[in-house]
Image (cartoon, rainbow over all chains, first blue to last red; front, side, top):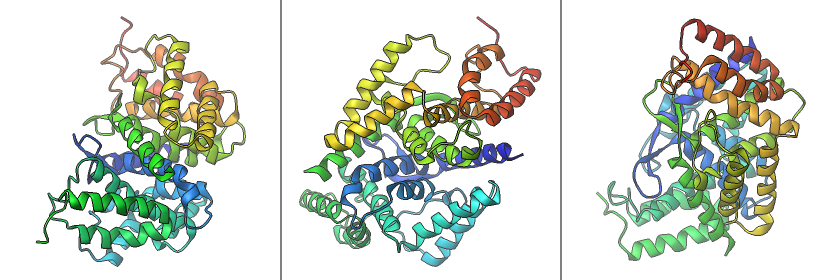
Length: 196
Length: 196
């Protein structure tokens, strides 16, 4: 029965509420999880659509962002500054996406898995814009919390910029200009860590 | 500067992560918040689209669900079984939506506020389907957690059914048949409270 498959999907998705990210929510009282993060950047994309580097079909971006972290249910969250094998990491996430989305009937699962792959490949305007949201949101939360996380994990200004600039600038150039200006202010306030 | 307005919107949205609902996540370790709930039912809607009572423009449903609880940032969450003044409650939520979404430029804010009003009025196929998701998800989580919340709050089987049946059945009849069957099983297992 296919409604039952949808309910199994819902309950599998629930596990993403338990995947804890390194980013604190505003005010700093706890770390955010990947489910609420996905919600937040989907709405962020709706707001920033006029600033996409190329015109995007925004509802495809929203779907991508709702799905983009589902693979973490099996693969876990890894901070963006970690030195991991990107290909292996991507394969682990794809495996997770296939398992979770695969609780749905094949004709529904297949396009969602394709959409996740499109996000991951970051070659289309929608995927690039989605990546810009995903990269910028934690930085904006860090900035709202006095740079928490950067000092704690010894992350330098240069490392932040080199890791996030490309994706934000390619997907949403105006957002990068804003983020860069705020990062420079943060640098002056010594919110970054020292290279270990 | 409008990118700055979008960033303010992002940071305002963050407050919804702090609005705690009465529903436990699967496993029962904590209550869910309204941000992650919104994410979950947006994906639930994508999955259940084939079972909508009338054909829906699913991306409008997704947007509605992403936005539907934003008014709780100011108005707080109220359990669906609470006896509240519905008109006053709706006015408080609308006021919250207008304030939060109103951080965006007017031309972006206006259609989002209209979409929220459409959801609230529950008169269109999209809004009715969205309401079905919103009503069914906590019940499905309660069922996955052995009925937690019903006993605790003294909520009877009849009260659950009378409160949720209409909205789920009108928006997604096949989902109601599934939920009803599960609720009857739960009743046999004495998962419901007694009327106080």
